[in-house]
Length: 288
Image 1: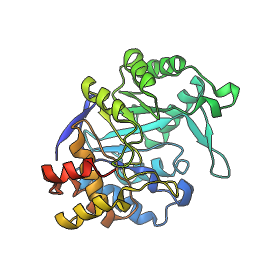
Image 2: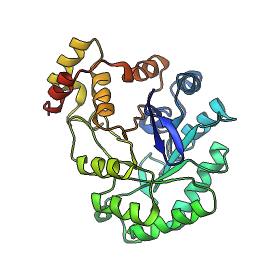
Image 3: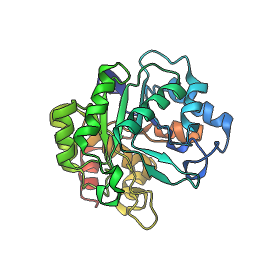
Image 4: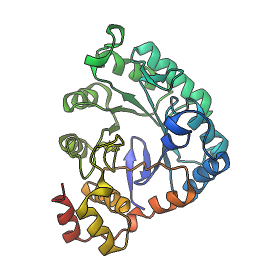
């Protein structure tokens, strides 16, 4: 499997996202605890060396499962987390954007994962127009806090998530970020400029919603007629085709497909072997 640099970590381009390990709504214990543990262990067996998680997945649940399944961690495993939100008792995502809250979240991630340093911490930005006044924090102040944590050795690399192109540029200049996590898929290419900027700067691009929006009534890659036709032709699933298209888009794309089932994990890990020809890719490029 090909690799790309996630800061100081050369990682395989297919990693694992832990968001689906907790229960429904990313809350509470997993559907099947033993299978969740097995998914993590099988992923590492198959070459996963980049796991994306967050303290607010559960909350705590994803991190605790990762620690149970994999600690002491194998050499070279990059554990990436994100900060900027917490959960309320109803499972809602509550902004936690103040510098002190970002620091507290990093400390919680370190504690629950059982590590002294995280490979990457992604700053999850939120729409300032939807935030209460005390959560409308300048990006400069947030990045400064993360830079300080990096200087203390608690973070190896800084990333940014759900960011505009201008914010990505600012984060590159101020914090020397190592990755960007933004929505991007075959049916949503609104972040194409950000992908190209990251490619030019040698920064990893980690798309979320890689198969289209998770929200109802929004476009899905697996429902696209062209994707389904190509999938049938090459003997792959529509999801595999959509993810393989992302890998082919640029070499700095790192995928973190998530699942709570071993069989689905193994299907995801075969994405790199999907035989998309140049004509297939051209057809998919014009699909949306």
